Length: 90
Length: 416
Image (tube, rainbow over all chains, first blue to last red; front, side, top):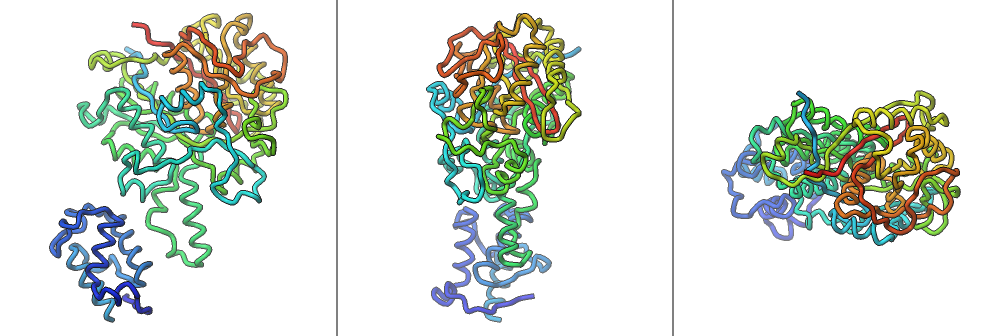
């Protein structure tokens, strides 16, 4: 299920959903910016185990009011960005 | 053949210092570390003071982002104490051969209760179970610290967490001692940690009736063994030591601090909250420790009592010492340095062990604050407000907890 009830200020202002996601990974998860590419695996390349992925999706939910389920295919950073943008536009 | 077990490293985070050196120097200075609780609004809790770890910065201790996010501060204290103990023992668990021969035994009574308390508050405030963060499940429980630290250092040998309240450190140390003595492990990180200076932890302990509600000057509230004792003052922190098979320690040429000689353990089997007024059960634990250490009463140089700071319990503790040591009761020095820090609950035994190891190393015993007039007349030789220079070859460490648990541990300074 994807919800986007509020217009989120952060996204409307910089018009860049990808940058918003990236900044969570860099600032909250302390991941080096240059490691984050569309084909990057969340688990194998970025070291986000299942619990940390829950933390990431939880942060996205709290920050942007966008719910992305872990039941969906979610292996790479690119997949995460696509889901995020889709949810944001929806 | 049973192995001999030695202590090769020590580490601590406690009121007064976030490493052994700073901690020990602050305690020797005779300055009380007990202060008013100001980190949260505590007006409705009638407990005014505690021994707190101040200005703890996980970044300064190089604790990783993942560890910080996933743990209560109790696990972070224990991580720092473990790191120091390993460094002190010149030990890198990842470079010690088979990781299954390195274990971890930890005493902890309140788990990550502050972490859990905050998450539950979020849930009840938002009326939404989804408000609970993803790490609640792995941060609050007692064995969380053991899990996180063994992952950090790849320690794969037998690990266990002991939730035996004020004697939990002793149970952890005893388990590590037995595992090494019986050849199951070469090395075990042993000790305890506690972080209960938060509303939930304080309220629970207050309900037990053990904590002092005195509103006197903070530094004078905790008065172990003194006639005017008004109750215990809670402390937080963690102390960890490296226990090691003597031959293993000698083979790698590391410095040895002390040998663990033996333990004694009994239960009063009388009351959930109150230690028995019959000192016989406690005395028996002390005698068991002496027997397992193969020492006579005259061979103890330093006694570190539980010092719960309750007139009734302290009286029976002194009586138990007189009973167990007999005519030799007046020989050893008796000191309660935790009078300066507060009682670390599950961490207390390991913190007392650091006091004893430092006394052996530096030939000076840390003072007992606020012991003006002992609760009963006895031949015991108490150390007062000033540090006591002394040759400490052997030390008897004592613990006493809720449910009537009595513990005794004996160590001897290493003399090659």
